[in-house]
Image 1 (cartoon, rainbow, N blue to C red):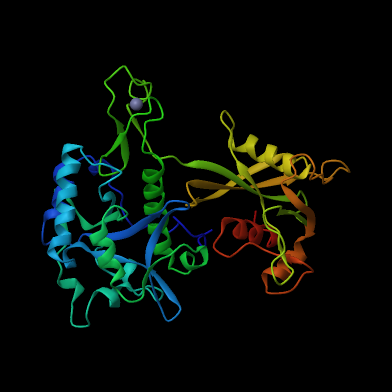
Image 2: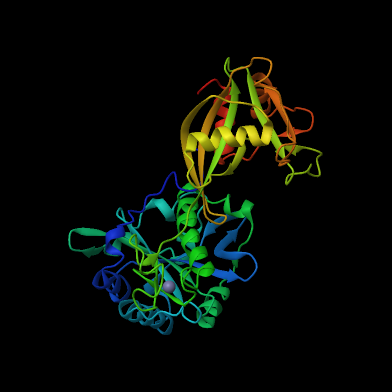
Length: 393
Ligand SMILES: [Zn+2]
């Protein structure tokens, strides 16, 4: 399933073991020859964090600037961050917040800069500028272009600078985000999930004290003295890690492959064209549950149908705000009872139907089917439905 958005084409090597290496982090920021690149976000109190994007001629790109092309007074802000990062004194409420994302080991080439949807390259560099002239950042035996996510919410100077560019805006629209290239969507999912987590977690869940981002923004440290905080004293860890919430999403199919079970969620009423989206069954996993158990439970609770076999097939990070979609197939053996639909158990679905695989194939090929529409391409739901309709499961 290579057509899935968000995470399937990540080309950054995260080098997670370097996040806590202050010398490495500091050099990626203060070395004037490092090609370090920045992806920018700003908080919106109600709706989380949103990226700065370039929009030009109907195309979108994730804004992605090289640190050392910024005016020197702005570069200084990042030097200050680096010093505070080393001393573990960053204040989530007042300081610019950074997260080290990794190294693009192939450096400044086509991945994030020259694909057809990305306008970033022409935006940053004048025509005469030769990207390949810029040296790679090297550290020990590692090299590449360092990438950071930056939250500018508490830095008016950076906000002013970013808003001075024509065609650059803070974007809060799923459709705009889905218009970027797959590489950019992976970079977006990764960076946005960290930015969102830092915005939503300012106090220790164990003792309520303020937390400090450490390891270049990838962990949160409680300042309460040891043994006085249940998080800090925990045998598992003395810090908080980012949260990822697993969600199972299942394409349910009859054992002969001829029928596919899809539901219309109460949250998705008919659009202006009268069509309602029918999609896979999905739901949050619960503590103490296997993926297989969760899948069977969700099918039954939402549709009343009893499935038996579960096959885990693919996964997709879903950064709204912190989900991991685990894509499965569930097989229902028709016996006059197992396949009976009842949506009144948890009332999540407004409608649920067994479709002929051929009907779905027609829809996928651009055909029409009554009031039915399918989830958007690039989503794991779309890919699961496509696989079932084509008999690939
Ligand atoms: Zn604490």
